[in-house]
Image (tube, rainbow, N blue to C red; front, top):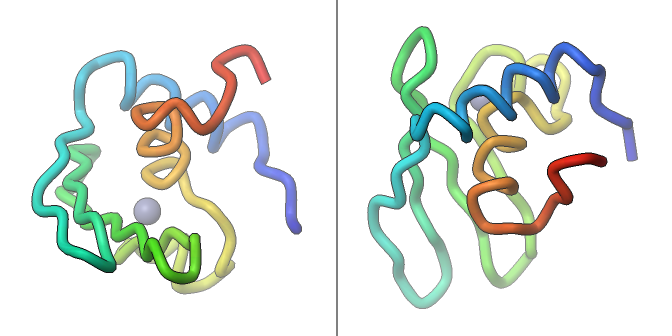
Length: 83
Ligand SMILES: [Zn+2]
């Protein structure tokens, strides 16, 4: 797994702290989140696979966690804030 850069983490932490993460819809298999960064992004957590996806360019290019996904993880308490 690719570790996140400090920039991505800092941005994700800021998004979380500023209350930019909103839980949208939860279904049996997925949880949908909205993250209001520079643009609005949709982060989807696939419960069956245990994976996060995001609709932003960073994620589609790098296929690693973007700041939005990191923010959602903080929101869910998956990541330790000081990590
Ligand atoms: Zn993203």
